[in-house]
Amino acid sequence: MNQPAKKKTQTPKDQEFTESERAAMKERAKELKAEARSNKNKAQGESNLLAKIAEMPEPDRSIATRIHEIIKATAPDLFPKTWYGMPAYAKDGKVICFFQSAQKFEVRYCTFGFNDAATLDEGAMWPTGFALIELTPAVEQRIIDLVKKAVGAN
Image (cartoon, rainbow, N blue to C red; front, top):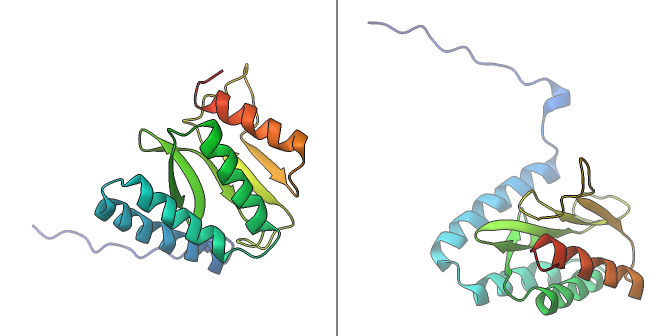
């Protein structure tokens, strides 16, 4: 029995991905292949993460480096990795939190964010992303508190 020919759908211009979004998706595909090869080797994940941080321009690089130190000290069981070309930290294979350089998508601030696997639940609504322009002692403490809560250490 003949099946009807499939229609090709056109994507409207306003729904096309930007060049930086396409690059992030390609990067994620490479990361998935690398993860399969490394067999979830924590040292390799950290090496990949640190390489991504090293590529960042200042001040993003310094902020990402310090956040990495904070997360390692606060939640050493989290698995460091890259996720869409960003430093990220996973638990049981699920990304809990990530750092996005301001330069990655040419925006005015870095983002420290959490995914749904993070246990930040607070009533019917809670924040999962934070704009970040510098690390002060108060900001560092807030990150520590959020990471502890995200991994269920509070």
